Amino acid sequence: MKRRDMLRGLTILPFAATLGGDLIIPKKAKAGTGQNSKRNLFEELGVRPFINAAGTYTFMTGSLMREEVIDAIRNTAGDFCLLDELQDKVGEKIAAMVHAESAVVTAGAFSALTLGVAGVLTGNDVEKVKMLPQLEGSGMKTEILIQKAHAIDYNHALTNTGAKLIVVETTEDVEKAINGNTALMHFLNIEADHGKIMHEEWVALGEKHSIPTSIDIAADVPPVSNLWKFNDMGFHFVVISGGKALRGPQSAGLLMGKKDIVTAARLHMPPRGFNIGRGMKVNKEEIFGMYAALQHYINYDHEAEWKLWEANTATIENAAKSVKGVTTRVFVPPLGNITPTLELSWDLNRLPIKDFVEKLRNGNPSIEVMPYDKGIHITVWVMRPGQEKIVARRVREELSAVFG
Image (cartoon, rainbow, N blue to C red; front, side, top):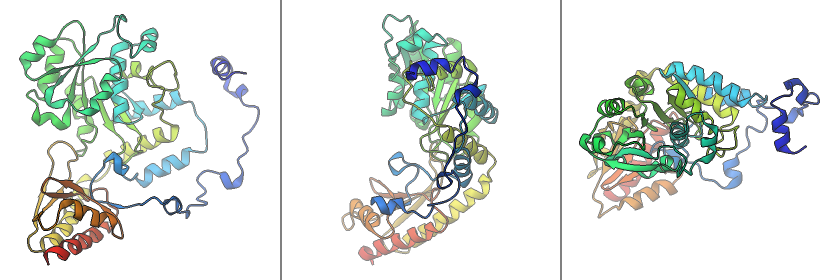
């Protein structure tokens, strides 16, 4: 039987009739046994692990999953379920947690953006779903309004649908740009302070003209309240990464918002294959893991965690500023990656930034920090317990070697 015929048959055959017998799993292959857990694949493959003193960057593989998330993945890896049923049940639970009408686990925030826009463009019309990204002659709207300050590379997620971005700056620009082809008004939270129109006014403009509004908050928790703030504010859909502060699977994210948009977006997702989102698969383990991550994050003691971050940041700052000629500053970014951030600067003529970064990277253990134009930034929020002391020692060693 051809695969496509089998998939067709699954819609009419009773589930019990689709399996010819019990699946026998050899003892050594059973999920969750912990066997081979001591195998060091980093060493085996020659891949260099490091202490992450930089933050939740994708090129550094995001963040580390919580034990609760790993347990959820391990405990669900040994059984099958129907993907849509799982998304239904998990989506219902997540929606309640984030004050949304509906939610779905996606293959990251970028994926959630593409799927959300696709849902806005096509609605529940399957023939239109099949047409994307070919909008010409489809009868679908084709334009997305976005502020100039919010125009970043990640907006490819929006144009993957075939839609065109219309750049505006002022309220007057928005009023002039809106026309019969305007499908959506998109907002980038991390650049909010660089734009001329803030969140509430953006939503109000959308409501005035009956145009849906969306917002990208990919890396914008903490605070935990951001998980529901923008749903409460009235944005039609909100996207966030699962592999940053939520500490879920790095390749997962959330699309949350109005039920009609999320429902339509799911027509563009697996298990369906007639759409632009077929390659944006999320496996069952990631869906369970994302649910566990969100549940844990919402119920976590964030005040205690913040105090720990401050204390660990101070440990590194005190070590750095003990070196003559090194200037330190601790600040908190206002919109994204909102955690204590340590800034170190020094005479770059004596120690170029690149040299310092490479000394930390090539040392033992390897440490990654984030350079900026006058020095480096260090964050502690994705470190494992005790690693802040190692970073403090290594930073002081390398700075002292030059400045005494």
